[in-house]
Amino acid sequence: MVNFSQYYSFPAERVDHVRVLDLKEGDFPYVLRVVTKSGRELDVSYKVREVRDNAKAGLCAQIGRELSGGEADILYKLSLILNTVERLDKRQLKIWQQLKKIGAAPEGVEDAP
Image (cartoon, rainbow, N blue to C red; front, side, top):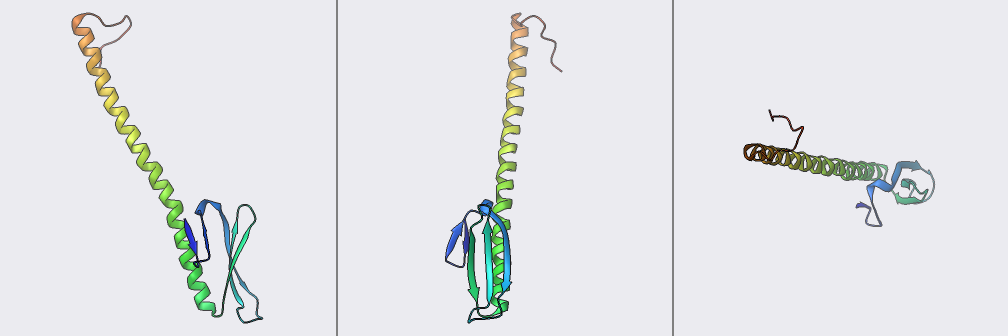
């Protein structure tokens, strides 16, 4: 979950884009806006431009970390699947070799490499 200025919390997958606005009027003229894929706009206003820009950098980094974390999770699961397939292939080879020794190998089964 992405935490946006202690006011909002949302999953990174729902973020469409992040925008900064300079209103040039009022007590809090610098706005940081997150627009979700559903079209909802979440705003936080700042008095100082540098504070807003630092908040934007932190928010974008947080979104990036959460999104890339999903990729790492997928790669980890893929490596588990590949490891399982390799173990199954070794077990299957042993079974075929044992069946061949006792003469019970099914028709059409070739010698294993």
